[in-house]
Image 1 (cartoon, rainbow, N blue to C red):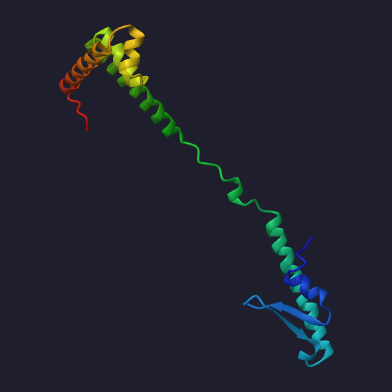
Image 2 (image 1 turned 30 degrees about the vertical axis):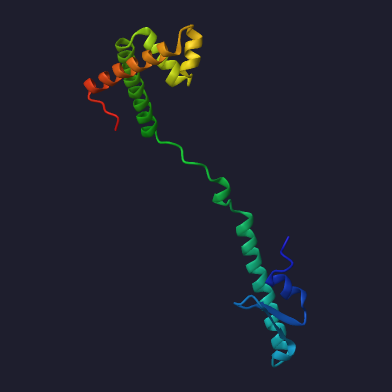
Length: 163
């Protein structure tokens, strides 16, 4: 199916003129009176019909037989090297994390570790922790403060700082 408003369609429909598009997008009509003879008009009319038809077919063939890349764009897959590095980094990070948790566990009392975990990792308040353990809030506050001080000492000795 061709476009009914294409240059080819407009030229083919108008038997008494050669219709051609200009660079400004306006269609120009060359009528029989613009040519020296009827024979010359017919020659150029036949040529324009053939030329527009060939152009139309070439354009349609291009659009009908191509796959636009935008429709098939797939995010690039990671390379084998990236996958191996990610796996290595993940393994190293897991090892560092496990070593750090072990170091923290051995430096804190069981109560301090449990209370710091509830406070920082689970987002519980001092009041909630005190209620869970059946002790006063002041005891939880003191335990958290001592636990933080112990952690600060661990990080100082290890050469880790906050920045």
